[in-house]
Amino acid sequence: MLTSKVAKRYAQGLLSFTQDSGNTEAVFAEMGDVAKTIANSRELQNFFASPIIDGKKKQSIAAEIFKGFSPVTKNLITLIIKQGRESQMQNVAQEFINKVNEMNGVQRITLTSAAPLTDENQKNILKATDLINHDNKFDVKTVIDSSLLGGYILRVGDQQIDASVRSKLSKLKKEFQLN
Figure 1 (cartoon, rainbow, N blue to C red):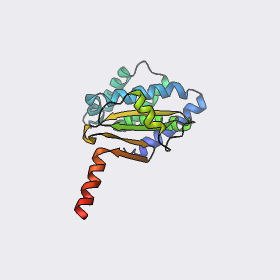
Figure 2: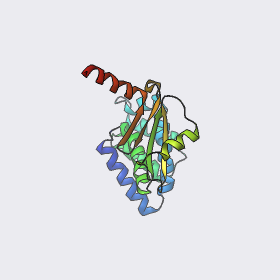
Figure 3: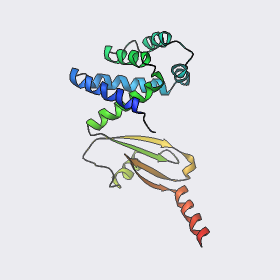
Figure 4: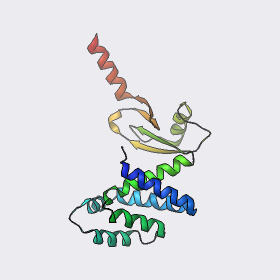
């Protein structure tokens, strides 16, 4: 997913501020909650994206939803809404998370398979690849996509290994069409 320049700028500003004030980890956890809350609620996404709803109303609702958060996070949410960028709030939160993970040397890995994998299978797949720096920490996100038919797709950063049955069948189909 492409992240907007707006989200990157807000996230970078927040990261700089939290590093100076020494509360990066607390805000990191809260930004994770913001991203999950918005991602899991279609109504909240529509609410923030609506141009009809007044900014003051959005601020009061956001203040109620995120009332247990630190003043830094609350102020950022208020600022985003005041600037009319509330539709980017989830992206700002996710970009902040990405920046903190990058700063801490955490690799983001996405493992897509046709069916759920056991922990042992996941470990074997991760050990078998050279894309992963096993000395660093990594965060594995698993995705189930039955259209793969079998196998897996491993994405590490901007590199990808496609060992799915779907891609192998597609390659075979192309070879038969050429011959």
